[in-house]
Length: 206
Image (cartoon, rainbow, N blue to C red; front, top):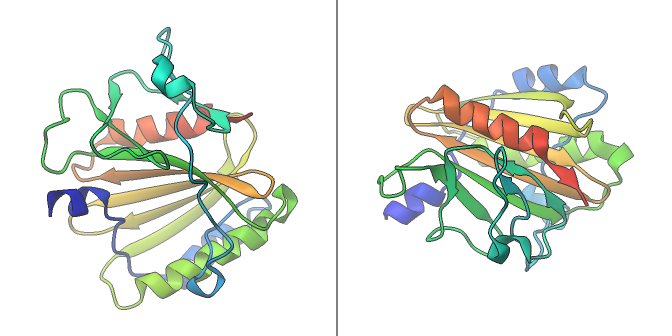
């Protein structure tokens, strides 16, 4: 039960007009696919992290020897949550909160889609359609933004606000691939928001 809560994506109800209005002005912004387009996004069967634990700490060999197609920095004070991480998705929590029932957490994974990097708006629209179907009838607020990371990659950020949590999804656009950072913030922690943003800004495709 606890694991299901920890791993679950936020339930979100969609303010579609607000979302589309927020995203429409960005010439570079991605999205996630709809249930009718389930082949748009897929996650490789083997992936883990090759990032480094912030400022001058290198990633342990067991994490850096994988085929993760990019690198990123894990903010200082955040640690890998081994009991929830898989070869496809790596979870991080703030150090000292590993045993919390519902800790704020950030996951990272990489998957593929059918779109080139230049077709990021089609990718975004596919995500919006999927979210619209998932969020029908649920009590939450969804907003979206399109911008660039510090590495100048297009990134679409979806924020889902619920009574019990706020979720942020960062879709970093690649060429027929994407990196998804998923923040689940139970405590409304600004430091968790900053950590997720820092990880997204540090991500570099191989």
